[in-house]
Length: 197
Image 1 (tube, rainbow, N blue to C red):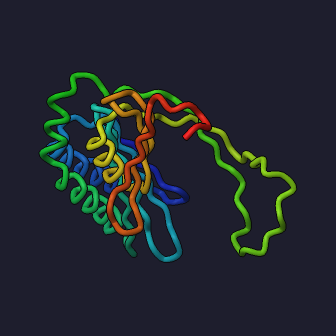
Image 2 (cartoon, one colour):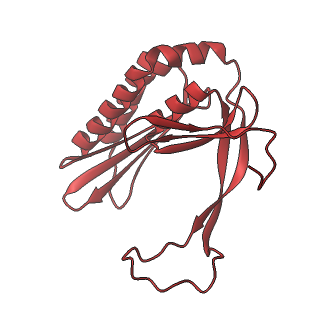
């Protein structure tokens, strides 16, 4: 397993690196069994230390957690405690998922764009065109998952929305967290032509 520990304008010592490796090892043994890569990044936000941790599992799922505290070790512990809470919630399903998949989750690459936003003050001038201004372009992975796996992946990643290819029928679907706390699922019909209800 590859573990990368970095700091944004913070020196990361061997003791902190060893602490992170130990915590990741405990979580891996307890919940997932086969992590492939772990990336932990430390930074500062005012007087607080921030720890962002991401663990990529061999099945293709990934778990993300964020922790902040006045001390750097406490921020790491907070991030790993959140990650453990997420993993504990899905422990049985992760083990079943791990056993049932001999290959990583299939995924397609899709273009992902960042569009220029408005100033946010509500007083912005009317745009000259409705054509959005592209600020950045990257690639993103669209995984093939069941709806249950997609909800699990969305929650493990701490994301409010997840676009995925439905393993049941191959269509592109979306799951998202609603304002009322429930999960929304968008499943457009496969035979529907673009622009026709």
